[in-house]
Image 1 (tube, rainbow, N blue to C red):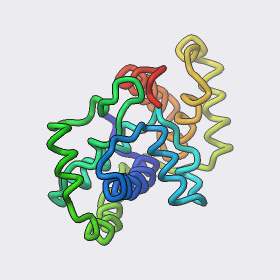
Image 2 (cartoon, rainbow, N blue to C red):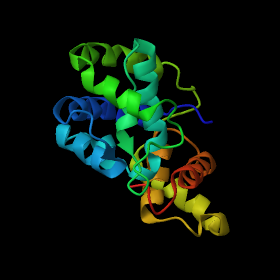
Image 3 (cartoon, one colour):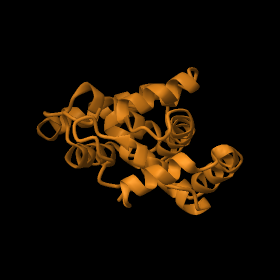
Image 4 (cartoon, rainbow, N blue to C red):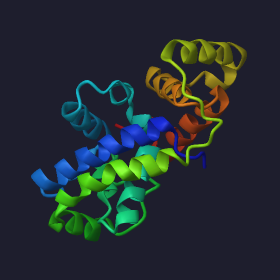
Length: 195
């Protein structure tokens, strides 16, 4: 698997905060991927990276959430994020969902905020040096050049898929790696039912 990108880390940190809110206020009721992104955006309306996030790219962000919980010995917050059709967590989720939901509901999450920033810094330091972030316009131009020379491989992409590819390219991935990541997510999560 491709290592976490700066985009995965930034959005993943916001998802941790949104899932803590979900666990605390709604007693660990499941939340669909698109609703989770909406909740995170409502908590951070000026976050541009979060504003560009789409459900098709949520898998690595939830792996960040799982990693944060595992490192600190917390119940796995990612158990709350579910696919709209199946109402189950994605394929990257490991664990007993019901037991995790009960543990998440009964946990005192007030200590987690203090540890999130340090965890983000630690994970950001592990991002490969070859991942050089770029602005949206250069990423879009690079994607278009790749798209023009690889139309057959890109024929089934949706606008949401393109947005996630651009997001990953802005985080430093090359077009081929970003495309592979989105296609893998569509296969793992199901293209029509990710939301």
